[in-house]
Image (cartoon, rainbow, N blue to C red):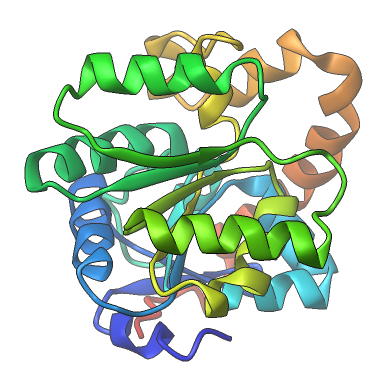
Length: 263
């Protein structure tokens, strides 16, 4: 667990299938990320959808990676619904791709250098170009698309030196779940800055993958859009973890023991 996690104990939270999730809005989450970036400390931030929470419920080592996060926001609507049933009736979804853009907006305003770790080598330049178009003052001090295999110790030493030498205070990590959460938990102690796992946001913002229409996002159907776009890869995952979540929500809804859980 991150030694710096207690600094965020002032934030309200609920327990979702064994993982504590912060009950925050987009504005609160993005402001807190920038606050952390101003400190010479190691932190990582997780945007947890049903997949991450479900894997954490089954895999103790991955659950520890989630628990080590300094801030864990409800990316998926079912995660937000769980918090609503625990006494946070207005809890919104804080989607990773949207959080990335809001953090970039604030970083551009405040002169905070950011970095990009992940995505595809062919599309990373397009992501940088789009971010600079949307936020002209944004300082992108580092970017790297790692190979699909783990980096060797020597390769990681080179990249770590580049990250530290770049002056980056916020490093967006786009490796996909659960790989990025494990990576952040393992490498955060070596990097005195904020790591923010944003999953498919790199592909969305680079224009490689089309995101669900806004109306689908508003009503909580972004998962359906992704499923229809890639059924072979996602059907088994969604069937498994959405079913687990449905059971979790039903228990909360009809259990007399459902109550507010605050840190």
